[in-house]
Image (cartoon, helix red, strand yellow):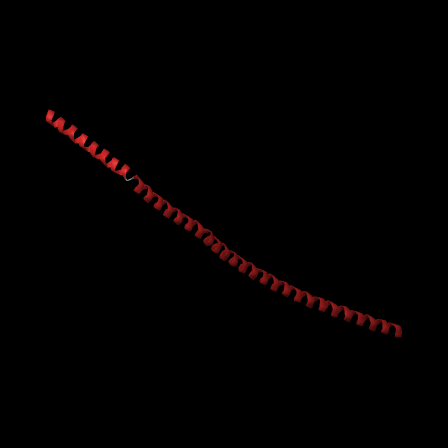
Length: 120
């Protein structure tokens, strides 16, 4: 039983010593780790900067494309409205022409009756 306990304690101490040695090795490599960390940080910052620079361009392209589509739709609607307005104007012109013809004809008829009335 004691030998078992001694073995467990020995194993635990050995594991802790190994961890301490590894930690010391890491601490001795601190300049190398800092160098690697600096390089990785610079690389990550560059990637982030590139992504952030690319996004506004993509957003601008999408926005411009969407504005173009909306502009085309509005231009088409305006063309339809203008076409209808031209049709209404043409129809109104025809109606005014007919009214003018009727008015002219009425004036002529009036003159004929006046002329005929004065003969009597």
